[in-house]
Amino acid sequence: MTTALFAGSFDPFTIGHADIVTRGLRLFDSVVIAIGVNDKKQPLYTSEERLRQISSFYAEEKRIKVIAYTGLTADIAKEVGATVLLRGIRSGLDYEYERSLADINRCLTGIETVFLFTAQHLSHVSSGAIRELINHGHDVSGMLPPGFVL
Picture 1 (tube, rainbow, N blue to C red):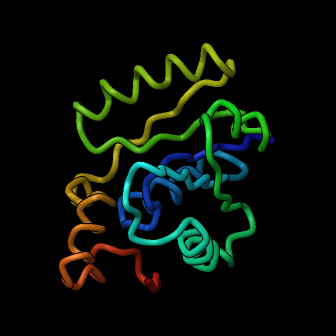
Picture 2 (cartoon, rainbow, N blue to C red):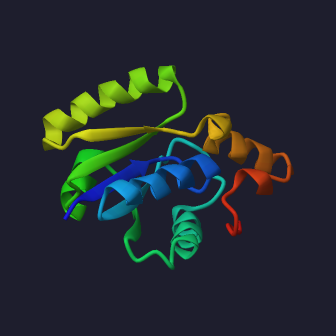
């Protein structure tokens, strides 16, 4: 069984991230979405709220598990039995950074990383931008996957 771990301190509910999860399910038996907590950032939602939102969005897909975590991706990968790390890339600049992280994670866990480029028409949508828009009272419904409710 091949389990892909999609981990990060981002909010994996944007269209781009949902696209990566959907494509990951075509490649692997299951996907674990691990929502990292970064105490240095002022989050838009608590980790419990994000976990509840994202879990309810993916509730119908039994091959997806959503968890919250703190610490290193390498540690959570071992804990959930991941056989591959799944990373979404928006641009070539993202790839350079993510490639370095993949090298570190491979050294720590022995697990390879699979990079999936976000579809071109979704590449401008980042969770950071969505958080900023929400903070300033903008409607972001067009940037969220159909059916996702904040």
